[in-house]
Structures are given as structure tokens and as C-alpha cells.
Amino acid sequence: MRLILVRHGQSEANASGIVQGRLDFGLSQLGLAQARLTASRLEQEAIDRILTSPLRRAADTARVIAEVKGLAVQPEPALMEYDVGAVSGLTSAEIRERYPDVVSAFAYGRRPAFPGEEGRDAFAARLAGILANIAESDETVVAVAHGGVVSALCHMTVGLDLNRPGMFNVANCSLTEIIRDAAGRHVLCRHNDTCHLDGLVTVIDRG
Image (cartoon, rainbow, N blue to C red; front, side, top):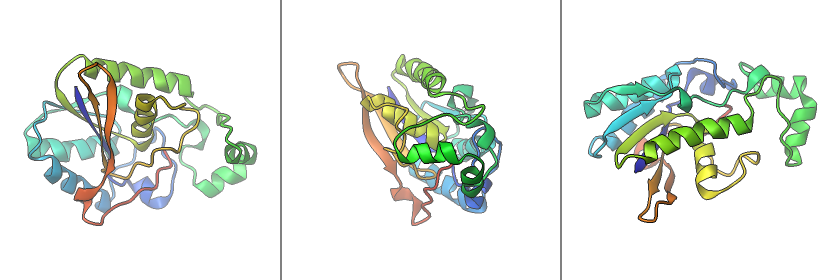
């Protein structure tokens, strides 16, 4: 197994400082440029399949890559972003105003849930499922997803607690790679590779 994780290009909500979660925003013009540079980076890679979150910002990024590779895009609902519940569509300032106790707890390393949030255990279960499915083959798979998904898969691969996020920053259209070694272990061998983005790097991730 070789899994190349791609975070989607900058979305319209990323550019506006809006928390997305499951809200469906398209790419900004910068995000589209990032997707094209990523497609050029992957053009010479031997890729068997391209999977994508069905959300537009990921699916549109995947289609740019797929066009260069001459492959079909396979929607995979398990790659959708973490559902942040009631804070979807809010800015950071609005979240601080409406949920000050939750935000304050984050500063002390605690992570209470926002109303309607998916839950880290459910999130981990669906990501473990898609990772297990991909690991059953010897294919090279590109999976276009979201910052929360890529970060969580990194946490899971190296054995870190998903309730303590923030260890892995994930830039728009960065590449992160997980392989299965000869002993059958999953190994994080590349993270947040942005060498192809030619200075067009955007990192902010509010779900």
C-alpha cells in the first residue's frame, strides 16, 4: 500500500476565515491554482486510483489531478471532513463569542465537544475503515480530503491521541504519504510536502 493524501486547495471559506466542517464550499481562484500545481507534481507518479471526499473543495481538486492522470475519480464518503456541528459557518471570533467555555478549555488541553459535533471516536472509526480497505491492496492511491482528515490519519499512524489535535499542520494541496512496510506496519514517510506549490502555500485550517 502507498497512500498519498492531498488536502484540497484553498476554499472560498478558507479564504474568508469561515469554519466549514461539512458545509460545501468550492475552491477559490488560489485554490484552483494550487490544484493545478499539485496535478503537475503528481503527473509522473504511478497512480492506480484517485479517491475523494464528496465535498466540492476536495472533489474539484481531485478532478484537476484526475484529468492530468487520465483516471476516474471515485467519491468516498468516509473521507469527508470532521463534522464540527453548531460552529459550522462561523468565524473564529463568532465561536469565541458564542462558546467561550469550550474555547477556554482548549487552551488547557481539554477538548469538550461543540453542540452537534461528530465525536472523535466516530471519526476515528470511519477513518480506520477506509485505511484498512486501502491497505488490503498493493495499489498506489491518491486520496483528496481535508485538513482534519489528513491530520487525524497522521495521528492514528504514529499512535497519537485524536483528542489532542494540532500536532500535524496540513497546508492546502500539501502531500502526505503513508505506506505499509514489509512487516505490515503503517509508516508516515512524508508530511505536509508543499515543494510543488511555488510559494502559493496557505495553511489555515478551521475544518
